[in-house]
Every structure is written in C-alpha cells, then in structure tokens.
Image (cartoon, rainbow, N blue to C red; front, side, top):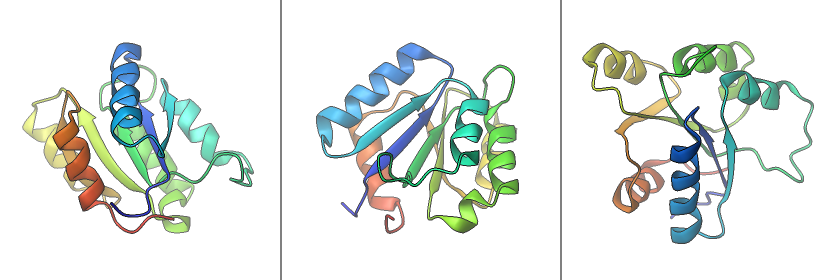
Amino acid sequence: MKNIKHIIILDDNKIDCFINKKIISVIFPNIKTTVFNQGLDLINFFKKDITYKEIPIPNIILIDINMPFINGFECINQLSVLNTFKKNTIDVYFLSSSQNKEDISKALNIESCIGYINKPLTKNKLEEILIKTRKGN
C-alpha cells in the first residue's frame, strides 16, 4: 500500500458512510477517514485556509453521484474550479449505486476520476482502490 493517510467519503446516505468508514478503519486502521454528507460541506472544507496539520490533505475521495442539493458531478466540478486537484494529488473514485451507462461514462471522463466503483464498498474493492491510487501526499 502506498502512503495513503486520509480518505474522504462523500455520500448523503449516513448508513453507507458508517459502513464504508468502518470497513476502512478495520482493514487499514492507520488511515484517517472523514465523512461529509453534503457536497457543499466538502467544497467548504477545501475553501477554508486549512494548514492540514490536524486534518491531512486527502489522498482519496470516494464520492456518490446522486445526492441532494449538489450531486457528485457538480461537487467535483466546483472543486476543479478551486484548483483542488492541481494543488494536491487527490484521486477521485465515484462510489455509486448508479448502473446508468451515461453516469459511468461521465464519471470516467472527469480528469481527476481514477475509477468508478459500484456500491457496496468491500474489502476487495478497497484494496483495489489503494493499489490503483497514485502516490500519496
């Protein structure tokens, strides 16, 4: 496993977030996991002038597509406008229950998107993500 220190989960489904965070913490207890339930909260996280001493820059963002207010695509677009992905090495994986071919294609055509994973997150899927992820921050 590469130097993965921090994973962010963005999903409006609190049960999915709880389960995904638990999977990560059980398999890789040294990886910090932060959960956001709304895209705007994640955007505001990156807008703040954070020194990242207490909260490291995430190496990975697992993001759902279908969420209220700001969907996953809009959220990634706004983060791109903030140059979030140019300033930091952050890999985005869409973790979604959507089987829509247009959603999958759209996700995979986003520059910062490394992969598309169908829910639920499993140990094997998590290990594949960590193997595929670029060198951490």
